[in-house]
Amino acid sequence: MSQFVAALRKDLLLQWRTRSQLVAVFVFGASALLLFSFAIGPNAAALREFAGGFLWLALLLASTLALADSFESEMAQHALEGLLLLPADPRALYYGKAVANLLQLTLLGAALVPVMVVLYDAGTARVPALLGIIVLGAAGLSAPGTLYAAMTAQVRARNTLLPLLLFPLVVPALLGAVKATSLLILGDPMGQLGAWTMLLVAFDAIYWSLCGLVFERVVED
Amino acid sequence: MNGASAGVIQGGWEFVVAAYVASAVILLGYAFSVFWRYRRARSRRDTAL
Amino acid sequence: MGKGVWPFVMAGLGLALLAWGSTWGLAFAPREAYMGEVQRIMYVHVPTAWNAMLVLTFAFACALVSLLRGGWRWDARLEAAIEAGVVLSGLVCIQGSIWARPTWGVWWDWDPRLTTTAVLLFAFGGILALRQFVDDPVKRAVWSSVAVVIAYVDVPLVYFSVRWWNSLHQLQSTPETVSRAFHWPLRINAFGVLFLLIGLVELRARLAFLRREAESAPPPPVRVAEALGGVR
Image (cartoon, rainbow over all chains, first blue to last red; front, side):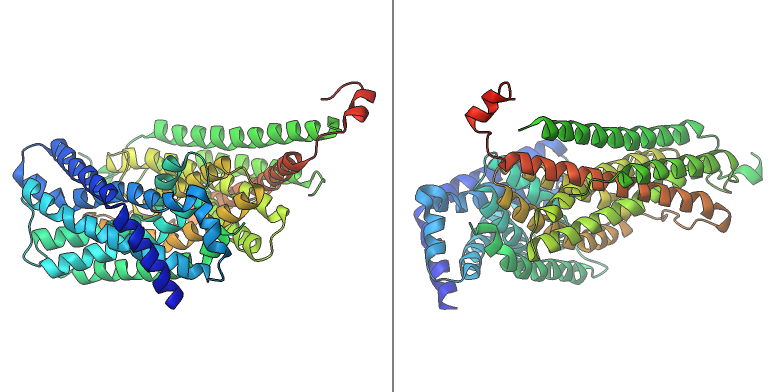
């Protein structure tokens, strides 16, 4: 447990030191939201209807940058091998990195919400629920994303491989997050929010355990 | 309109043919692709030192 | 890895069964009540879909064995199964699309099973790409096995999420029951694709095994090569 906390501290420190990169990723996400609105045009009703989908698409695209970045420092000067030489459980390393990525993606998602509210006129009164969905969706992205970032950081064409591997995988999480967000924005007359939240929780539970289990094999030499 | 055939898809042979042709092309094409690559690899292995 | 000719026999047998089943389905099976001739597409579509799922399940099994026990043969079979799975999934999507056009008037109707197959196509296609970009054979084997396990576990999740998502919009369900008169061409074609696959996956696995052997083969010593008339 203390290994996990140490790993988490290390990754949070890394993220703090490279926070300018996070700002750049946020700007990328925000401009993506802007560009998506051009696909719809100045149709207020349609923009509101699709706002949830576009928010998560922007976050998904931004996550490929953020996740790839998270392993950049590990690759420089063989830091990853140095870490693995320590008598630490690789799972602690994985969960430390994954939780740090989760926090970063949640921050990103929360920061993109005001952009969505302004551009798409898509606000919600149920702010804590929206925050919860963002956390669950970000968790769905960061568990497999951290695993695949660790893999692809070690090969060429990494910038193409990470989204190529990640995107099909996170379809259930994406669907759940988009539906849940749309229901929060547009209203939920039939009470479906619970079902979509359960889907997100199931996806997260499965992948946070599975990816932690296999991480050691992915980084061993 | 004749009641008996209302709601029945008329014709459509061109779609059936397209589906069968696509299936044949892809299955046979893949079979030959595997066969030729295997033979090339075998001959390369047999003539290598 | 194996050397016999049985895969060729299997594949040939499979093709013969497919020819028989398809002829039966095209020419002799009765016309269906509501879908007319278009129903005949089912005689290739359903067998392909069954076998696509089967070969991807086999890939999952190979990945587990490869991770737990290792061995180059299982990695070779894994590569073969993934490639065959991608080809079949792609074919299923093409067939489904051709079927949807006259039936629903659109090229894609977001049917949960077909959409799941499309996601599988991209997921396993991505794993094939992963194998291309990893040069170290050990890493390639471990990573693609991990990726296959992760992608396969996703299948029920993808299916249920798409089904819930789609059920809010789709009023008609895709008819999947096939009445009794139509069973035989279906079964024959199913075994046809199965036998063809068994033969092809075995050959493709041998190919993968040979390639990996060639990858790590040391170069021939200079003098011997000269003596035998030049290096290849």
